[in-house]
Amino acid sequence: MIINQGPKAFMVNTVLLTNISELVTVSQSGERCKRGAGLRELNIIRDGAVATRGDEIVWVGLTSELPRNIARDADVTIDCSGKTVLPGLVDCHTHFVFGGSRENEYAMRCEGKSYSEMAEAGGGIKSSMRATRELSLEQMIEIGRLHLDQMLLLGTTTVEGKSDYGLDFDTEIKLLRAMRELDDTHPATVVPTFLGAHVVPDGVSRTKYLSVVLEEMIPYIAEHRLAEFCDVFCDEGAFTVDEARFVLREGKRFGLIPKIHTDQFASFGGCELAAEEEAISADHLDAVRQSDIDALASNDIAGVLLPGCVFFLGLNKYAPARRMIDSNLPIALATDFNPGSCNIRSLPIIMTIACSKMRMHPREAIGACTLNAAFALGLSAQIGSIEVGKRADLVLFDADNSLHIPYECGHNLVNTVIKDGRVVVRDGCKLERNKETTLGKRA
Ligand code: NIG
Ligand code: FE
Image 1: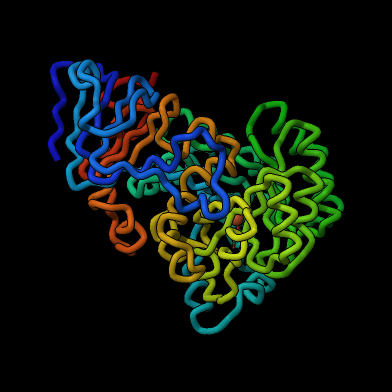
Image 2: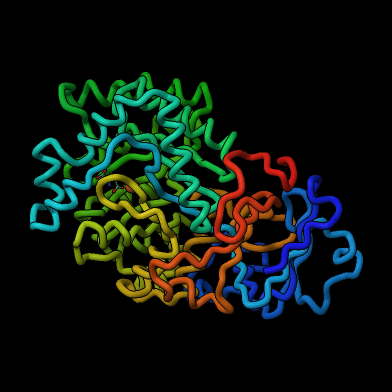
């Protein structure tokens, strides 16, 4: 790759990518999400070019049709021969700030112990809770920053993150503050979600814990604008549909948009609740019924599939992705990165699992990690596709076509990442640790 930084390298305003072997714009029509057969139609331009100004995309098309003034005025020109360019990947479901690790549980699972047996024995979410409660705000920020660095190097430019391993007022708030701080200082965009209703911690009754969530946490989080979404774990071993309804309604009353973890282990009724409470997404859905798929589809709710979790837990029941696509449900894919059920930070690996285990086509998997993932965060007017006016979040892969991305499983093909119009990863290495790089200030 040739990077021509030009005379204005320290005041970069415009970046130009030319000769892109495969430019996957994902969409050119301003659509908010992709459904059905449309999910794999990714508007691919061969020998394409993209120009950005400030933090916006200003031109997309064939290199041969690039207007002369755009070519002349570029501060940085990158020759993308042999490269595939995608919109910055969007990870719309993670738990990326947590204390400790659970490799011992993983080893025990490999020997046959089940996820729920370990949770009942004081492991699982509660063991991460204990480790997370030990952390200072600074330590949370440091851990979160490390995980965001790793995700950025894998091509992820927007990360949703849930507070959920605190399970008490102070720690939940600290987790959300850490994510706000990371959004301000790390190149990646961080979208915080409140998931205080993850499980009931030991030593507190269900009723008492729920009243803390409803009466103390939600009002405080809303007042201090610490989260965009309110999530709830509505499944076997977590919260019932009635309890989840209270949480989502109260969150909504305070301006937090509902999301739900449901149907991971059993068909539980959480999808009906998602439809009733107008959730933006319903996540996991491994045990979903057809009537629930239809209810989500007809209410424009994104189905967020987390096949990495099924894989990592060594289970076999994957969400019925093909049926969901046939039913016109807009499906997104996410890592669900967390210390217990899915210690995977890489969206390309999730794409591989989705293709091999759920029979998604590689192009469907790409659509599900870009525009549809942005849709699951209500951000698809800004990110998720390479269209004029959208944010300049772009990833350059060392591959001459996009089918390589799920195919080269476990090998990181990311060469360059452009976030908000600034080059933040080059030759597979992150340039700096914060939002201001030598290639220009944040617009
Ligand atoms: O999305 N499903 C609920 N909880 C999280 C992580 C649980 C864990 O730490 O084991 C999830 O998988
Ligand atoms: Fe999750």
